[in-house]
Length: 223
Figure 1: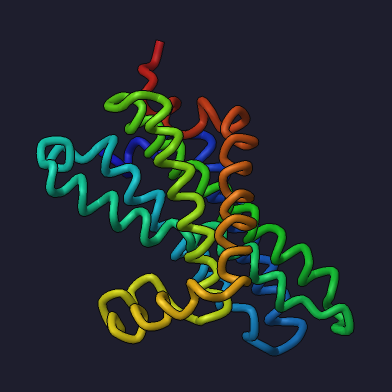
Figure 2: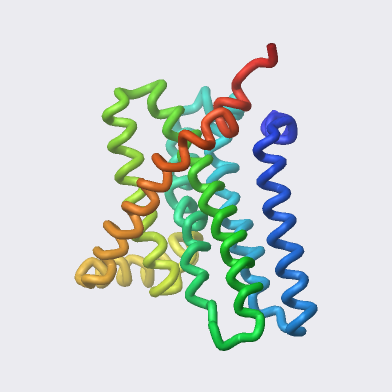
C-alpha cells in the first residue's frame, strides 16, 4: 500500500527525478575526474530516505496503527534516523574552490542537500499530522521542536564525532561516554540550538509549499 501510494503521487515522482539528476551529475564528476570521492552522497541520500519510510508506517501500516508498542518503536527509530536527512547539507564542507570541478561540485551538493532536506521535511509533516490528530496542537508543536533540537545534536554527533545512527547498537558504551562528554562542549550546544532551529524553521518554511504533495496528497481521495 505504501509503494502504490508513493508511485501515484506526482511530487514523489519529482523527488525521484531530483535524485536521478543528482546521480547523473555524480556520474559525470566520476567520469571527468576518474575519482569516486563524492559517491558517499548516494549512501547519505539513502540514509535520508529512511525517516520518510518510517513516518509512512504511521499512515499506512495497519499493524502499527493497532499496536502502541510498534508505534513507540517506529517513533524512536524515526527520531534516531531523522538527522540523516538534513545532515547532507553539512557535506558542503567537502567543497574546495581550488578544484577545477568546483561549480559542478557546488551544483552536485546543492541537488543532494535539497533532496535530503525535502525528504526530512516530508517525514516531519507525516509525524506532525499524526501527532496533531492524537494530541493537542501545542503539544504536537512542542514535540516536533524538541525533535528538531535533537536532530541538530545528531548532526553534530555525525559530522564532528563521526557517529552513525546504528552506533547506539554497535557502540553503545563509546557513544554514551561521548554523549556525556559532548554536553560540556560549547560547539555541541551551538549545533543543538543553531542547526536544530534551522531544521525547525525549514519545516515551517517548506511546509506550505509541500502541503498537498506529501501526506495530504496521499490521503486525499480522487474526485
